[in-house]
Image 1 (cartoon, rainbow, N blue to C red):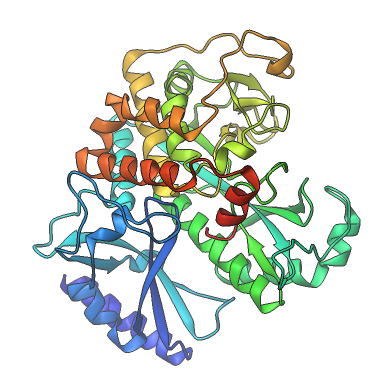
Image 2 (cartoon, rainbow, N blue to C red):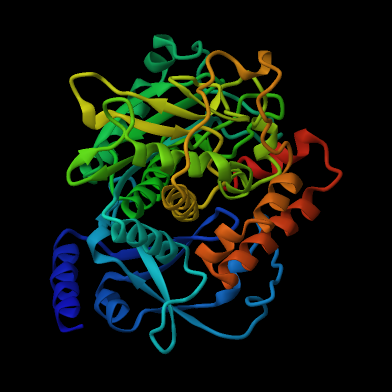
Length: 441
C-alpha cells in the first residue's frame, strides 16, 4: 500500500501541474452502460487508499436506469469501494481539465466484489496464464454521427457514400480531432474509416492484454463521445440506430500466444484451434453477453456481415467467427474475429467469457468443423445463432461453463438485467426499440 500511495501522490502532483481538476472513476454495468464517480484531483490519494463508495445495486441497473433485482444483489443495502487503476490513468484530451481511470470494486473489508466485471476479466486472463497461454485482444468501435434534432428525427451531417472519401472530406476536421485526441492519450490507432451505414465510422486500435483491451474500448468510446459533442454532433453507439439498418458492431479480435509465438499464425496451431472451437461451441450463450440488448437482434440479420451463423471461415465476414491469417510478412497480425458482438456489451464480460469458453476448448482438445466459404444463408445447413435475446438468454442460463467462470453473483445479476430488458421492450415495435437504446451506450 505504501508504494501505491507514493505513486498516487506523484500522479496527483503531475495532474495538478497539468491543470487537471478532477478524475473520472469509471466502470461498465451489466446493462453495458458506462457509469462514473469523480473525485477532485487532490482526493486521488485518498481514493487509492480507501476507495470511493458506491452501491452494489448498480449491478442490477437496466438500460433505462430502472432497477431490477437478483438472488445475490439488489435493494438499497450495502456499499462497495471503487479503487482506481493508476496503470490506466489517462489525461483526457477530449475533456479538458479531466483525467480518467477504470476501477476495480471491493467490499468494505477489502475483499474483491464477486460481481466486479473487470476482476472477472482479470481472473480469466490469469487462468489462461496458468496454462502458459497469453492473449492479445482488441475491440473495433463503430458509431454513428447525427446532428441534434428537436423532433427526434435522425439528421446526418454527411451525405457521403459508404466507405467514401466524400464522407471523410465532409467531416475531415472532426475525424482529425478524434485521431488527435486518441493519439495524445497514448492510444495506438490502427485505422479510422467511414463505415457502411449513414453517418457511420469505425476506429480500430492496437491489440493489448484482455483487461487493457476492455479498458481501451471504454476510453476510445468516451473520447469519441467528447470530441463529437464538442463539434456540435451527437454520437450514437447503440447496436441499432435505425430499426432496418445495419447497426453498430463491436467486433472482438483476439490471438493466442505461447512463448512469444502467435498460435494463430502459420495456419493455426492445434492449441489455437481448440481455443477457437471452444468459443464457437459456446457462441449461443456468449451471444447474450456480446449482443445483450433486444436492439442487438435488430442488427443480427443474415447477409449484413453481422455473423449470425454458428460457423467459422477464413476471411469470411458472414461467419460469426472469422479467422484472419494476417499479412504473410507479419505473423503477429494473425487473429480471430468474433463478429456478432455489439456496443451494448460490457467489454470486460466479453473478454472474460470468451476466454473461459476458449480455455474449455483447450482443456477438452476440441477441433473446429470444416470452414464455411461464402454466405452461409445460401448453404441452408449452418446453424443460425439465437434470433432474440430470449433465445440467447436461455442458452446463457443453461451454460454451466459461464456460470462457473463468472460465479453465481455476477452470473445471476447479469441474467436479471437481461430479463428486465426483455420485459422492458416486450411488444414494442423495432423502431421504438432502436430509438430507446441507440443513445444509451
